[in-house]
Length: 146
Image 1 (cartoon, one colour):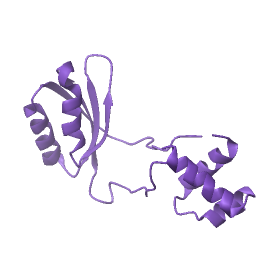
Image 2 (cartoon, one colour):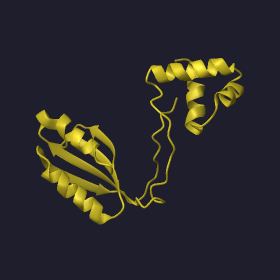
Image 3 (cartoon, one colour):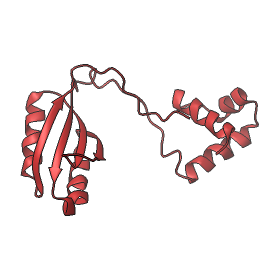
Image 4 (cartoon, rainbow, N blue to C red):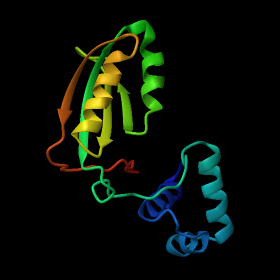
């Protein structure tokens, strides 16, 4: 990946609907080159998809929680797969320390959060959870800086 690829990624992160014509014009390259570069980034798995950025609060998801989970290590992938299927879950991380898994999830209200925690605790191989509710979002940007 060279500087042209990095510039293409930056342009697409600003606006994933940007046309090949606009990319080419911005970078001073041929449209075919822009197309081939983007296709190559997709083929390599660097560009995994194109999406929009939503405001979860405007959609009714005003409650974000960080949930730490202790699970039996042998069954960690199994627990994570179950969690990954849940619509509320944004991110799942294997972590070090006293807990094994960190989950970031969004909820419409406390009742949804309560149900999520109770059902997580009922999952086989989950022994303990600690829930932290987000009070203010200071920064939330999942784009990778290139």
